[in-house]
Every structure is written in structure tokens, then in C-alpha cells.
Length: 482
Image (tube, rainbow, N blue to C red; front, top):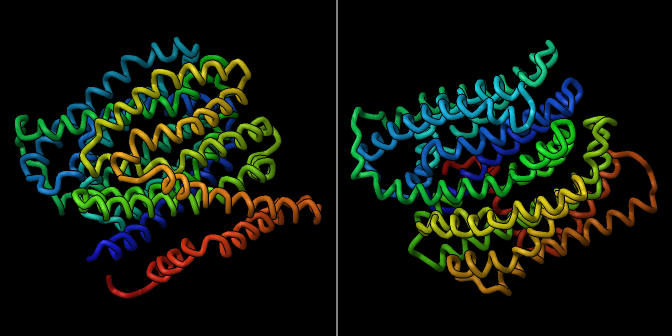
């Protein structure tokens, strides 16, 4: 299968998975917001941030190494699997041990049981993690998509039932555990067809992959802390209830990013890895990925900024009105981070996970300080500090990462990003003018007006994207055997 057909097939199934999972999560948030309190969401945000950070250490970053290395053998895979299992068990024990410390730091005793229950997901995920990676390496996007949609849907059903029965925040805990169980079970079932771990462990053979993975793990860990420091700080300074309001806004602003970016990132990383020595093709794939991400993400985020009030009041209710302004600011922040993901795929494809680690470690030296200063102005200050920082980092990110790896000049890079932004902004401005003239306070009509004007402006001003998108859509819907 050629790269184009492979990419289209991957995009098809990854699209189904990403959209379905994100919609399920959004519906879950909207429905459970009527049964659970802001404090429940705040506690869960703290726990998932701590669990999420610990989860980065499960495979020591070697998942990316498995995808990157094209000639990996059975002994290496088996050795990596048992190493993965050992680390998973150690992480579970660490979480069990530090749970009282976390509860004491946030002065929330309930965090102890929540952390210990969710710590089980480390062992569960460790069992099937390598098989999920192998499915991605083999471009089995159909199987991965079905697996993740099924696990998310089942988790939602469990959370809804338990919340109605009055289990409170443990509804969310149970949903996360069930989600992990289903993913692992299906990964084992599908992955055993590709590889069955043998009772062998050869450290000398996997040392180069561990070295590669440690840089990746370090980069992901520091990057995760950079992205979640706001949650940790708000939970400590303002308490779980205020954090619950912030986390709702953050989760909504993250959804388009979480839907759209994985569609390309899960596909472009293995494809970039296959052409890692061809700078011309690599550069073209990278710029195309940036163009698509910006052309899709920017209109959606501008739409959210303009309709944030209707989104919160319509789907979550009056008690969440404090999230409206935060949602607007965080949507602006996420819009300017939405085209950054392909940098990570580019680094890994070129075998330069070290660059990502150095970059994120440098950011870690001052991001917490910037967010802490912003906290003096409350939630608005925290969100605004993130937005301002991301805008400042545009040029340094090109200079240290994009330019050297993708061989892209600053003019070409800036044009690739700014053209979709200007088009989306003009579409949003036209929608605002039309909405002001009509002056009808119906949320559904606002969505139609703003969405329609953005599509219309994009159609006339973004010809290249539309031509390519129509071709991809045609191929996407085609029933031809690939």
C-alpha cells in the first residue's frame, strides 16, 4: 500500500476513533455535570493529573523507540515487554505509597482512596501497552479505533450508572478503570497475532532503545508537567471546587485538539519514520500536516471563543457560568498550540528525542513561574499567562526545532500558520456582523451563522486546502480496495 493510501486509510479510522471518543467524553462531561459537583470534577482533575504524570514512566519512553526502529526482533520485544511490566508494578506501589502525601498537600483525605484505586490502571495498562504500540506500528488503525471507541463508550455507561446511584466522584474513577481494562483485553487479543512475549530478557540488546526512550520519556514528562502545572497550582491555591470550574473549561478547549491532532499525528509519525532519511519528502509531509491542522483547528477555536457562553449555559447549566471567560482564553491558547504536535513526530522520526527533552526542560524552568504570577489575578490570570506565553514561543520553537529538523524557513513556516488564521478570523468577523444584524438569541442559530460564514470564507480563500480536502474526502468515502 502506497503512502497516500496508507495515510488515507489511517486518517479514516483514526478520524472515526478520535471524533467518537471525544464526543463520548464531551457528552459524559455534560451529563455528569448535572449529577456531580464542581468539587467532584476538581478532585478528579487532581488525581488524573498525578496519575497521568506517573503513567508517562510505564514504558520508559520505549513505545516510540519500537515504532522508530524498523528491524526490531523478537528478543528485543520480549525484553522490553518484561521491563514494561516491572516498571508498571513499581509505579503502582509508588502511587500507593505517595497517596497520603498528596492528600495531605491538598488537604483532601478522599484523594488517598482515589489514587490507590486508579493506580491499578498502571498494572492493567502495562499488560497490554506493547501490543497497542505494535498495532500502531503495523498501521492497524481500524482495530485501534474500534478498541478505543468501545472502551470509552463502556466507561461512560459505567460512570453514568454509578453517578445516578450516588457514587459521586468514584463514578469517574470506575469509568477510568473499566476503560483501561477493555483497551488491555482487546490489545492482548489482537496483539498476540503479531507477537507473543517469550521468557527472555536481554538488557544489552535493548540498551540503545532504552537510551532513545529515556529522552522521549524525559521530554514527555517535562512537557506534561508544563501542560498540567495550572491544574496542580489551582488545586492547591483555590481548592477543588474552583479547580472543577477551570477543569471543565480546559477539557472543552482541549477537545478539538484531542479530536483532530491524533488523526494526523498517529498516521504521520510511522510514515515520517519510513522516510526519515529523505529530507525533501519529510519536509513536505510536515508542512502539509501543519496546513491541515491549522485549516481545521483555527475555525473551530474561533467558533468556540465566540459561542462560549452558549456552550456552557446550554450543555452544562447556570452553575458553571464561571467557566465562560476561562473557556474563551484557553481556546485562544489551545489554538496556538494546536499546530505544535507534528514537531514531536518530526523529532522522533529523525531519532532526535533529545531535542524535545532539552526544549521542554528549558520551558520547565520558567513556565511554573509565569503561571504562578498569573495566579495573582485568579483563574483569568492563569489562563491569560498561558496564552501570552504560547504566542511568545512561536519564533523560538521554529528556530530551535522546526527549522533544523524540517529545513523550513521562518517565512514559509509563518505563512503556513498565519494564512489559515486570517481566513478563520475573517469568517468569524463576518459571522459576528451577520449575527449582530439578525439579533436573535438562539444558540443553534448562532452555530449555523458562524459555522456557515467560516465555511463560506474558507471555501473562497483557501482553495488549495479545499482541493486537497475534497480529494482526501473522496478517497475516504471510496469503497475501492486499498
